[in-house]
Amino acid sequence: MPVIGAKVSVTIKDEFSAVASARSTTTSALAARLIVDFLDRQSKEDAALTYQPFALPSTPSVVRQGTRSEQVFVRLEPYYFAELGRLAMERVWHRGTYLGNLLRAHIDQRPVLCEL
Image (tube, rainbow, N blue to C red; front, side, top):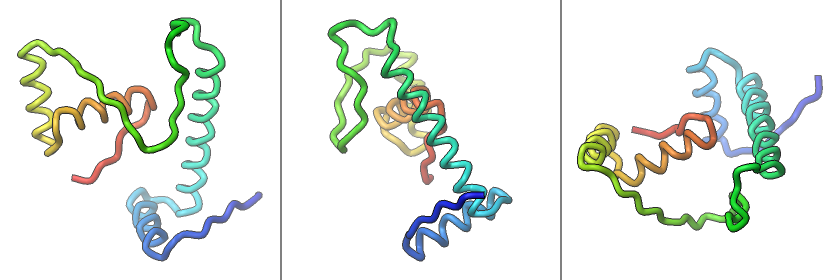
């Protein structure tokens, strides 16, 4: 079977090994799963970029590059605003952080991994 290698710091290697052990797998199997997941997601993103039947002509194409983010304003009814605050507070996040992570999880169809 072909092999892919990567050079990382000792700290990163130790952290990755710890995560693999916690998941009862090997570092090789975990890395392979990450690569397969990445390629699956990449092919879905490529397909979404080539076929967008509901995209408006004025909608900019999706480009995920750079570190600059944009700001969005959302109006919520008082009940939803309070619930957003409650859910964010449980995670010790700001409301905007909670909404941003929720959106990322929905769009990427993967959980947002955060340290508590």
